[in-house]
Image (cartoon, rainbow, N blue to C red; front, side, top):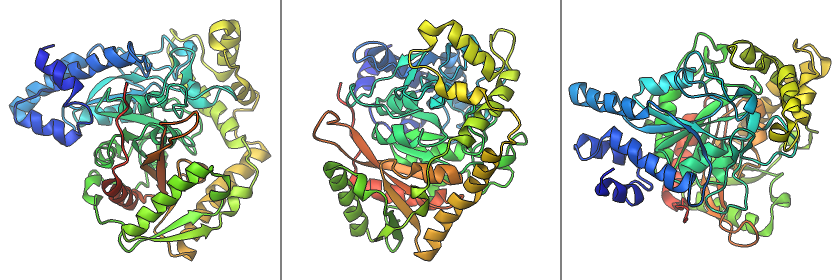
Length: 488
């Protein structure tokens, strides 16, 4: 790599946006190949040495050739769109029908190569993106062990937070969050069941979008829980996240959740720096009593900023479901049936083809596989694969009605445009309802063992409300500029 590119990788590339990259490529100052090489250099310098963040699990051996081909296509035909030639890292539970593995962080799937692209990977390629590699993650998307730290997997080891290595990365899309924060790729893709995009976005000073379940296809993604699972973008700016979200949407014949989606291919049309003026934002009553003094000060400052930007903030909105005891039946039962189906499609190079076989494999390789145990996997393995238990049926009915209805009712009864939460305090409510959330940086802690750790502000509303949530998050982001670059 030239000295100019080495300098750019340490200076210009840091915090460069998709628009910045496209402008230089259109001007002939930069190529997609240059971007791939610069990000590979940063991965070598910061992920595999130096602070050794350990966020990138695998690089695509064809990335350089794909970048060259996209550069050639740009010269011959022009760019496909705003993401042409842009490198992206995706979570290790998203299938790619290429030379890379898809393992969900498990050594049991260390040799698994998917037969074809997931719908997500297909959409990324159609947009002209370079899939640069796979990111490390909390093993089995954090539905394996009760005490497994965020960002740990038996295949990849522990991901470190670039702002404070002693603090949590957030999970389970830990590698995607850290890689985006540390400028190891232009964009990243994570997946969420309950907090797994929002949490690492909050703790890595990112904009993250957890879409409505059904806006982004689940086909070809190693699952936890089909009623809550979704993939979504993670980026350093709301604009970049919005650009990526538009590329990910689309109706998938293999995924019934997408058949009734209300999607857009361009979410940048909703970006509005004045987007909070005249809107009503609700604050749930369960947050403040449980926040620390410093957390509460950051949250109150965020609410004050919303008011300065023209929003009416309605505090004390009662969330009845916050008092309901958490029951694991949906995740426990759906993990069994969903994972069994996924594993049944894997080839003979994979030593496991059911959850029971995963549990047995881990027991046989306990020294490497069971550093933190597998209590959740064992519990799921003991359920039937029929979704007929009375506990599951009653809980899935509750998820489909109670949680969604509570969000809808609070929005309607208080005439609200959205709800806001500090960090990820309300992520479970939208997750169980299958509703969207958008998170944006809101500041950072300055005291205690978590000093330097970023925190976010989450906007949530009803099904397919991504356009207005993006508008609100963008207006807040543009006015506050809380995103900070990690210092190594």
